[in-house]
Length: 126
Image (cartoon, rainbow, N blue to C red):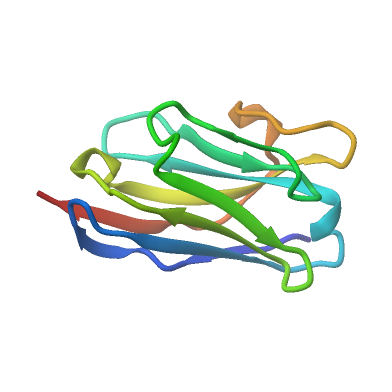
């Protein structure tokens, strides 16, 4: 069983920064791509960023490109999301999720992810 636990959310002013962390249980973390998604009230869950098993490949939603950076530390079983230049429209619950296994690349679709964390709230005030 895989467990994912997000942390690092909070309240920040527009233009500020936050770093989210997602700690994963299990010995297979380094063999899978990982992703971050977010969901605002009344909206569908949407893709934010993803990283390959090795960290060599990353993809981003257009809305966060140039402001957010995804990274991972396989020795610590942790994936990060550095969020800079935050905007009020970034306010959401942020979820990390396990993606495809090594060799299958990185994907931006919800269906490509099988295990999800409980989420962490990010609120950006104007």
